[in-house]
Length: 268
Ligand code: ADP
Image 1 (cartoon, rainbow, N blue to C red):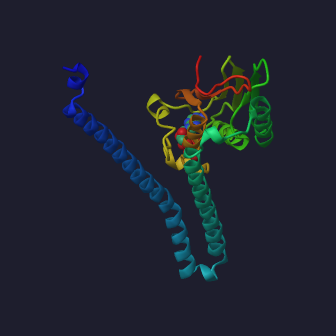
Image 2 (cartoon, protein in one colour):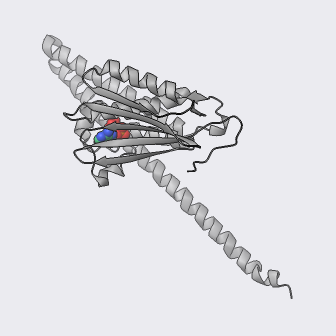
């Protein structure tokens, strides 16, 4: 008798098929659950600005028309909330797009040293109250196959957070280095830092340690999830080291692009 036929008889094949189907159903269920969670998160986030604007319109409607001060205040607050909604909607679109980048189609090569220095110089200009330092250990030109606007967006998100969640020690440190296969960019602050429970959650959509505080600073909890999705889409990774009260380091690692060699996966 044929041993192989015994091993993979019709019954075995049938149960293989069932287990494949079960796995597919599990994945579909997870996907549906994730979508439902997203819709629920988004509705929740949009509800606050809508409620605020509605409150102001109500106020205006009742007695704001004759009270220049109420009128002025309500219009300003409503505009600020509308602005917030616009940003939120744009960032959600960003997030969805980040999930859909077919990286094999990206042909743009970005030279990371120059770009990091430009972002750094801009932040120095915008935040003169901060001390900025930059350790550039690049030994040669470091190119990555990443769209320039995406790379810039990732760095801005990290530097922006370093500013937003700083404390009395207003210092921000950039570090740039490379190994044979990858380039590493670190953005360090000496601010409030994160507990280990919070640190693992900061890349989740809409996650904020202190909602009110983040909101007051114009945050919506999407920045780091966008950064993570972009970095991962390009075959890289983003990690965090943080300690409550003493600051955080966010590090991005991306595969170096070399024209001669096939590359893609992170190694070493
Ligand atoms: P946002 O800053 O808009 O709230 P992010 O996704 O960029 O959203 O960050 C999520 C949360 O992670 C922030 O609300 C904040 O609580 C925390 N966080 C991010 N960056 C830092 C940092 N450098 N130091 C301390 N906490 C941070």
